[in-house]
Length: 468
Image 1 (cartoon, rainbow, N blue to C red):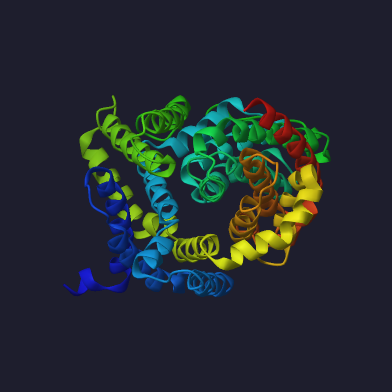
Image 2 (cartoon, rainbow, N blue to C red):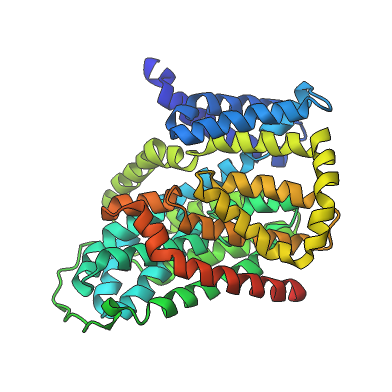
C-alpha cells in the first residue's frame, strides 16, 4: 500500500490518468473537463519540483497571470477548468510518444543503426549526413530522448571518423533535432502553434516538412567545406563482431514513422478526433501493433522477448512517463495564461493599441515575429512561452497576414531560438553530453547557420503560403 501511495507513483498515476481521460472523451458522451483539470493540477503540484528554477518561476507567473486576466471577464469553476486543461493534450501526446522507446528497445533498432553505419557510412561527409538523417527521423517520435540515443550509439563511430568530433556532433544533432520540431508528431512546438493560431496540423505539416528538409540541406552545405569534413575516410574493420539476436532493419523504423503519419492524417480527415488526439491515438495503435509484430518476428525467441519487453515497460514507467510529462506544469501555466489572455479585457485593449503599428508593418511582420521570439529566448525566456504570447497577440489583431503565414513565422522563430539560445534544453543536453560550454554549441557554432536559415525560411514560407 505504501508503495502505491509514494509520491513518484502517484505522480505517474496522475499522468496516466490524463491520457485515459483524453481517450475516454472520444467514446463517453460526458464533459470530463473538471475531472481532467483536477488531474492536471495534481500533476502540476507534484511535478513542479522537477522543473528547473527558471521554469518554476515562469510556470507560477503564467498561471497566476492567467487567472488574473480571466478574472477581468468571468472567473468561474468551468472557465478555470477549461483554462487549466487547454494545453494538457500536448502533455498527453508527449507521454504517448515516449512509448515508442518500447518497440525501439525491444527490436534492437539502436544496434541496427550502429551496424548500418559501420557497414555503409565512411568518412566525415557521409557520417554527417547519416547522423542528421537518423536524428531527424528519431526526433519525430522520441523527442528529447533522441539526443542521448544518437550520441551514445554513434559517438564512438564519429570519433573514429572525425578529429573535431565535438563540433561535428553538436552541429549535426542540434540542427537535425530542432529542424524536426518544425513538423514532427513527437514535438510540442507545432501543436502549441496549431492551438494558438487555430491552423490545423494537417495544413501545417507539408509546409513545415519542406522547411525542415530545406534546413537539412542548408546545414550540410554550410558544414561541407569545414576542415574536419575534408579528412580521409577511416578504414573500417569488416570483421566486426555482430551482436546476437534478430537483425533489425532501418526500413522498419522508417515504415513505423510513415505509418504514424498516415494513420494520424486518416483519423483527422475522417473527423475521428482533433489533431493532437488523432496523433495520440495513432501513436498508441502503432506502438501496440509494432510491439506485437516484434513478438512474432522470425528469430525472436519468446524466452528472450518477454524479459526484454518487461524491462522496456519498466523503463517507460520509471523514466519514460516522467520524461514525456517533464514540462506538464509549464504547459498548464501556458494554457491558463493564453486562455485567460484570449478571454480578458486586456486582450481587447492591447489589440486596439498595437493594431495600427502592426498594420503599418504589414509583410515585415513575417520577419519580425521570428526575430522577436529569438531575442526573447536569448534573455532566458523559453520559446514556448514567447510563441504562445506573441501568437495570441498577433492572432487577435485584424491584420492582412494569413494564419498559416503567422504559424510558419512562429515555428521558424522557435526553431532558431532552440538552436541559438544557450538556455534551450537541446543545447544544454548536447553541451553536457559532449562536455562543451552551452554558449559554444549555440552561439559560436550555430549563429551563421541560424542567420542564413532564418532569412531563407522566411522567404520560403511566403512562397509556401501562396501554394498551401
